[in-house]
Each structure stands twice: as C-alpha cells, then as structure tokens.
Image 1: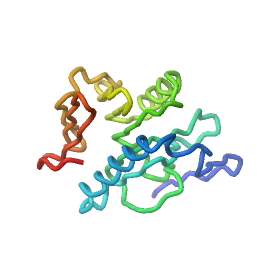
Image 2: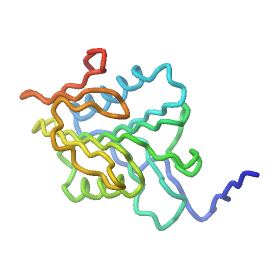
Image 3: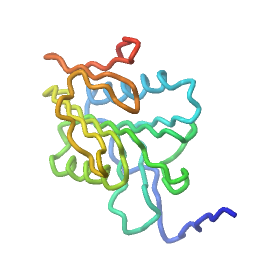
Image 4: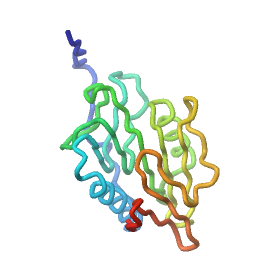
Length: 182
C-alpha cells in the first residue's frame, strides 16, 4: 500500500519568484549553453530531468525558507517533461543531484552562501558556480554528508554528468567525454 500525503490547502507553491532568469546576455547565454548541452548529452536517457531557472521546493512545509531556482539543475531518476516547479515530494522525494549557478552583478555573497547551505541541506551532490566576468569557477562535491570544495577544479570531471571542466585564462570551457565542446 502506498501512502500519498495530502496537499495542505494553506500552503501555496508559486511557479515563479518574479525574478528575471538572467541579469544580462552573458549570464543568459551560459545558462542556456549548459542546460541545452546537457539536454543533448542525455537526450536518450528518459529518466534524466534537466531544467533551467525552475523553482525547487524540497519539502512540503510552509515554514521552509526558499524555494530556490537553480540556474540549471539535473535530476537523475525522474522522467523528462514539463513542470511549473519541482516539488520534490511529488518526484519520489528525489533531490536534484547536480546544480549550476551563473553569477550576475545582482548576486550578493550572502545570497550565494544561502544557496550553498540550501543545496547542502537538501541533498545536492554536485554544485558548480561560475562567474563569467571574473572567470572564477568553483565546485563542491558531497562527501560524508557535506558539500566540500573541490580543490583542483581545472580538468575536473563531474562524477554524475561525465563532463570535463577546463578553466582557461579567457574563461570556462566544458566538454563531453568524447571531446565535444559545449
């Protein structure tokens, strides 16, 4: 027998936070580049859901701080398809395993620290943060229940996505394992 929790009618789960997807063309181009190339990479995998700027509600609780809308998120074990938001309790309680954020001038240090803590709390396995202006690229990998900074990100291969990150003087380049550049 399967138990399905009742939806609390007093809790609203909006599909939009009212914020723009990107603050500028470069941030938008990076979001689209990553999301669409991952869609191509996993096109034949029916249970890999990839989304850009989609609100993620990890728990059904009106006290939750959030939700968060990662610039790109990848969820293994969930079917492709349209969603207004990602309500984790309706998705077999599977959290996004990989999240990307592309910094824009409006992102504050406090906001990005809150997101890191949110991703850590709710089970993200890999978190990548890129600043296209400074070419700073950072990554975190879940180890022993915590997101730990990846010490050497240049040449790093994502354990989940099997893509390689190459940080060059002129910015980040991403490659599939067959050498195709994103």
